[in-house]
Structures are given as C-alpha cells and as structure tokens.
Length: 245
Image 1 (cartoon, rainbow, N blue to C red):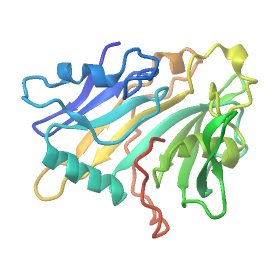
Image 2: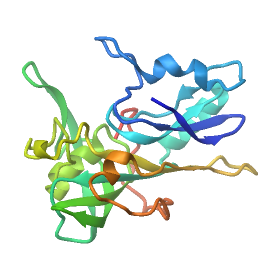
Image 3: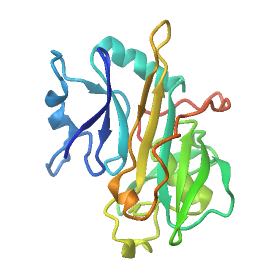
C-alpha cells in the first residue's frame, strides 16, 4: 500500500492512511503502519509517531509528530478539542433530513461472545456529531460528518443509532444487509484535518482525496470544499478519548 504524504514540515506529517491498514501490528500478524514508520522518517532521525487513531478500515488524514515536543502539543490540541475534522461516510440508506446534529452519550460494553463495542448510554461519555447529506446514489447516501468530540467508534455508532443508517460495510454496527454491495470495509474516510499551532506558526491543514471505493459507488463530490468550519461549544465533559472514530 502506498502512503501518500498530504502535509509535511519539520515537526509534523499527515499521511493518507489506506483503508485496511491498521496502526498497530495485529495479533495474528500482517502489515501495519507500525512496520512502515521507518520509511516515513524522510531524512529525519526519529520515526514519526501517530498523534491520534483511525480504525483499521478508516482511510484518510492521519497526523504524525516528528518529535516528542510536537507530539505533546498536538495531543493537547486534540484533548482540548481545537482540532477540526471532517469525515465522509457512505450510509446504507438515505437520511430524510438534509443535515443535523447527533448527541448520544457512549459507553463501552463487552461480552464473551461478541467482544467489545460502543453503545448509546445515558450515563456514558458525551458525544456530539454534526452531519450533512452530500449525495445520493442507488439507495445510498454520502454524508459529511464533523465530530465535535472524539469518542471511540463515535461516527459509526452515531450513524447507526443517531441517523438510523449504519455505515456501509460496518461489521459491528451494521445490519449485514449491505453485503450485496461488495464493499470490503467500513466506508468511512477522514477527509480533512486542521490543527492549530499557535504563535506565528501556520496551522496544519490537510485534505485527503476521495478513495477509489467511494468513487466506485458513484459518488463524485469534489475534493473541495471540505475545510472544517468552527463548531459550537460542546459539554464541558466532552473531551476526546484516545480512541478512534
């Protein structure tokens, strides 16, 4: 898998992570981003370190820090909800509304049979996602998601339980009715990322092109404009998890 560089300078690197590539080496073995950090040194002494996480299936913008100081600063920006993110997802169905906001608190549950998953829970951690319908093709919809918080599997659960339409191909939160579409992954793409750096430094701005498997479903929304826009303040307890979306 080719790792396309979307942004690069002396302290940061943003790559277009391919869908299907996990960040960490799987227990059963196989390729991972961890195995390829050396090739991302690009002349620097240290291997870059991922600042946040994306699910194995999720493609798109992944920020890496080139040194420990940058890693700490970028991590704080995520924790303080200063990072603006835009995701594209293909949902199995068509939302009735054009746009909206999903507010569903999330908790983690685990069973011996099914393993762990996230569920909506009144006493869970606050989670807020803004969404907008972009395109409709053959009973599917391309939706823009702007998570205000960063809970584990937030967009996947909010699509399934908030919109009532799971992401196409989602093996955990989907219904299985989308198998005839022949998609090979959960159809979620981290399309844009903006990270402020303070002082006189320009923000990190990156945008990942629409993946080929999205285009194969007929979606042709231009790569721009997908720049994140300011979000309203979330609940005080709505700081992000270390998990992925």
